[in-house]
Image 1 (tube, rainbow, N blue to C red):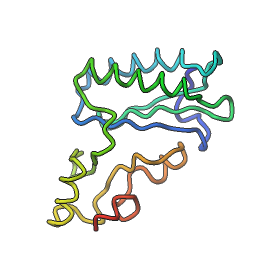
Image 2 (cartoon, rainbow, N blue to C red):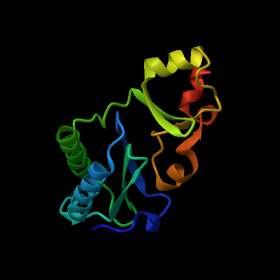
Image 3 (cartoon, rainbow, N blue to C red):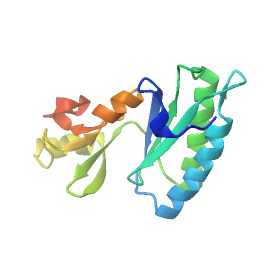
Image 4 (cartoon, rainbow, N blue to C red):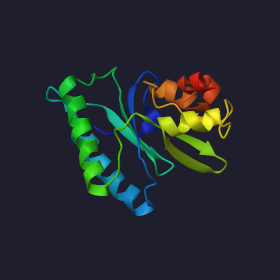
Length: 160
């Protein structure tokens, strides 16, 4: 069952998928329609999940489940990953590779491999003050507070 993202409790579980390229506005509109359909029918052991999604910066898909109502199960999580894989195939993007870093570069959102980001840190092309997207956050509350932070405040700090 779809609910507006901003109505979810702070302890709702989230999954963040980052695209290896900026998606067009048209692609985002289509993806959001598909996300709406998916979330409306997303279930765990036959019970509908109170769930939502948001997209950000034409690069990120964030899925969320209110675990106070019903927790996502292994099968329902597998269904969401399968759905994300379908998006990857349809739009020729990579959303599941966790070995990439997305960060702000001035007004732009940049996406680099972890190896390239490490090299940029070594070369001081990015610093501990560079705003990074910490996709390891697990809840809506963590996402609100710790998703878009200086590298020094996330797991990226190990590179500085």
